[in-house]
Length: 143
Image (cartoon, rainbow, N blue to C red; front, side, top):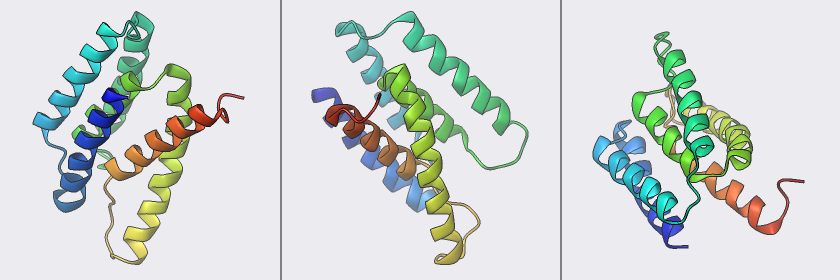
């Protein structure tokens, strides 16, 4: 419970910076990363698989971002790594689907209402984490 409170509290700050400045501060990312790693280590929930899979996925997203399409920033990729470590591997799959759908909604909103070409990604990712954890708690996912 404590790790969830800390995760969401720091994530709220990330949402603020991402929405206001389209920046995800490295200081907050590093704090969250250290916290998630230490908590996973002390709770014995951090395994080699829980680390390798997120690193491989984040490397894939990093490679895609280097294609210079400008759709995903470095801070978003770092936050994605933290989420991949924070969630269980099976939950991360649901997170990716929900995050993509929520980001699509945010993009439509930002394009139609705010007349902007880009939308911050952190709010969609935080909501997707919350929905994923709720789905796990009530037993909807995995089936």
